[in-house]
Length: 338
Image (cartoon, rainbow, N blue to C red):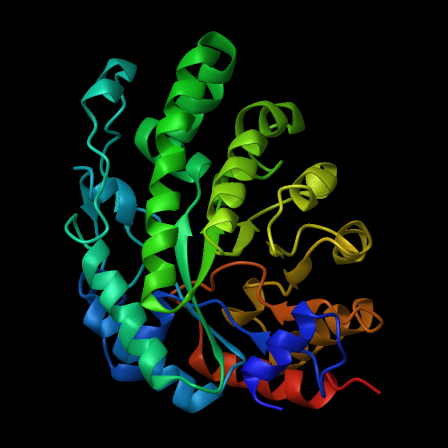
């Protein structure tokens, strides 16, 4: 089977020849073309070149075109710092004063910041990869809100000024809807990245009151336009798994701290489950460590055809390319369904 055939089988809950598999990488991919992480994030022509070169090497079943998590807020005027060999960092928050919300300008997919270059990179990769699925990654509304306000301030605001948080979220919702439509037009799938929305950072109550309604809104409005959404949440999500499965997302991408067994059970008949392989093994782990992680996940999902093996989150730009090869080789060897 081709990669795209395996992925389609997973979404139809049909038995593929083996579990579909892919690593989530961003700046690390730059090493394949001899570039730095900074080169990757500041020039998305390099992003496209890096992912195409990585695909030639790995032939993974999904090519996830991961930019940084600040692309959207930078397009609104935020200052972003780009270290040579690490992920970007925000220099300040546009909403350090909540009153600035009324002056924010919604980013335009075809003209704001690095977004047009990212969409062009998506089109280029999609045009050259025919045998595997290709997905774009954009920030979800809670991530955008946290990048505008600061996560700590935003969490405090849920208690001290909940009306402001809802106002901010209503603003933030429109951004992934616009970008989701633009990604669809670029020919790639849509994944929402919500790093700060896990119970590692917020309470289940905050998720249910301030995040869940907006996840449902985005996914519903995009579905009306025949656009399916994958939802990725880093960290620990066990207490909100039922909520996440209720969002309408076609797939849920989950991190290593959470229970794969529980998510597979909760998601039955609702969404495909993606991920759970520890990202740490790609930095400091051995080949045996990677094989153990792959086997753990494959064994947990052996009777669930609606599962895609992947890293639980983005692998650090400081990771090792050779370990990506070990991951893909191991997935092909031990991930076969019998």
